Image 1 (cartoon, rainbow over the protein chains, first blue to last red):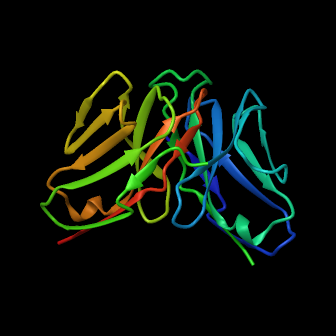
Image 2: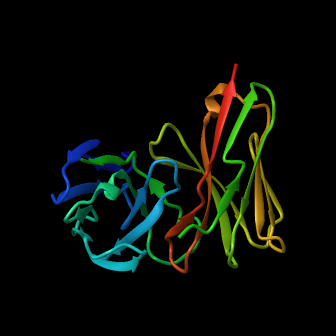
Length: 117
Length: 110
């Protein structure tokens, strides 16, 4: 049973460019959440997708957008990249939206390391 | 924004010693979770403690929760080199999104 997978593993972009990161959830999971983790910091919640809609959003600008596909996989898009967007981007999958354990346990992927030059 | 704040930021111990790290949070919670992260990679869920629980054990892990002080502690007994990692506490929002602290970096030397 494959866990959460993310691609690519590493990515280098320059300021002003756009980037797309991809995530496939754990088998049986239908909810995908994205987190940004700057160096030396804890992960910060970006947004969450369920039934192909953004359901919850953290304190991130509109340059951060996402999409969820019918097979539950998800993309994170970041436009007009800034140096401060350099971080590890983590995807987590879970079941449903209700905060009921163990269904809301989040399983994390290995992350995509984005470097903006 | 960060909900939890771990203390200490860094901890260095010898194999066999116990490691204790603390987490403080700001708002009322339904549960508190601890995660481990190896070398800046994905997070692994360690243990969840509900707001009506005071202590929970899982193998060499012991977690306590004091809701009156809005704090939690994670104790790792008989540490091993393989326990070297960053440890984060996290609390859920109204949905399933998590708010993480800044983490404690644990280094266990043999």
